[in-house]
Amino acid sequence: MDTMEGLLIFTQESRFQLLDRNGVGHHFILGHDCAAEPEQLPPLQSRQARIKVHYHSAPDLLAHTVSRITLLEG
Image (cartoon, rainbow, N blue to C red):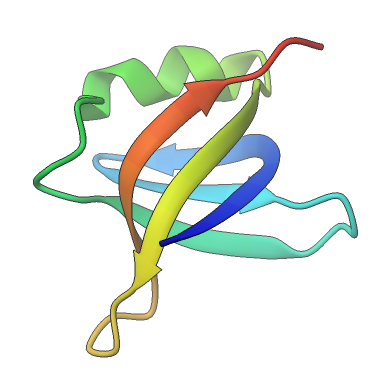
């Protein structure tokens, strides 16, 4: 499983975009095994929270599938 850190800059339902430290946007979707709920994402977006996602690539999707989100300080 891969990990990535960045700022949560866009959400729509269970989809979101993460901006990495190089300024590159990455698309993610909450997986069925993720404890986070779609309604938890907009407050994180509004403050552009720094998060870490644990994900795996989904070859049939244009986004990565997230299994865990960790809120980072700062």
